[in-house]
Image (cartoon, rainbow, N blue to C red; front, side):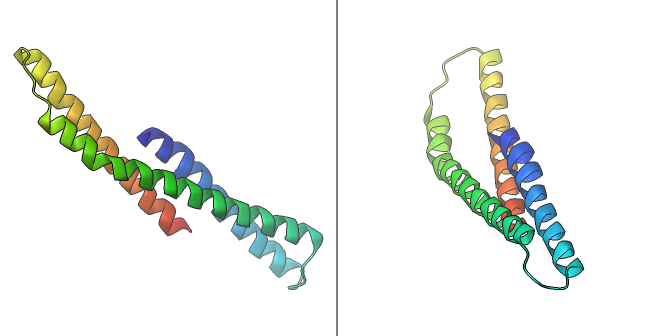
Length: 114
């Protein structure tokens, strides 16, 4: 999920919304402020991009809402295994925490990009 947030949500949605907004503003300035059919379509596309970004932010929030219960389950899981398996479990927990950090950072970047 963390790689999807960074690659798709941030790099695709945020950059697309910012490019669309910039192109709309440049086009609006070129035509002297009047609203043309092309600009109406561009404005609708910008609005749709913003709505999709908001939907993806709600998906990030849903993921982050499940993190405390996952952490609790990981902390209360008894690990009666040999040392190598215990180390692998600890490494998996570290990877999970890193992924949570990436998702939080990506969500923050998306919120700022709006």
